[in-house]
Length: 161
Image: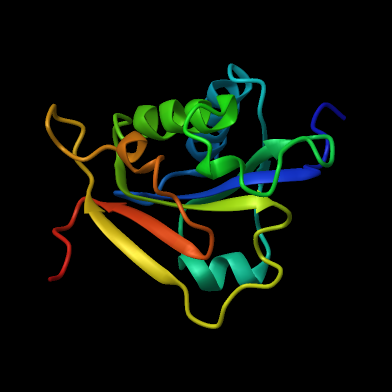
């Protein structure tokens, strides 16, 4: 089988590609992401539930990152700046901003449980410019102020003010 179901959820990522990609290329990108995540001893599970699609729109790829065992993180793990999973996620997100072909990267942190249960009716979105150049805001810079029930968006389009 190879891929166990997540028992501890840390992060949900939605990736929008600049163009429609064929199924083979989509699978290759999913495997590239899986390989990146596994370098940090995390697991990846593709997310296809309608609630995720409603929340992130028609993203090309929606995945959950986490662990295949329950109760391995405290509910406030994402508020601990030196937490190894927080540091790993910061590096993964920063790496994703450098991938070619991404038009938008969205993510939402979880306190360990399934992120799609107990969602608020309307989630806050914080929008940033998707820009891998030095000096631009990177996802890792937000990791000391993450909140659950908030979607962080890095978009190739300028944020609306």
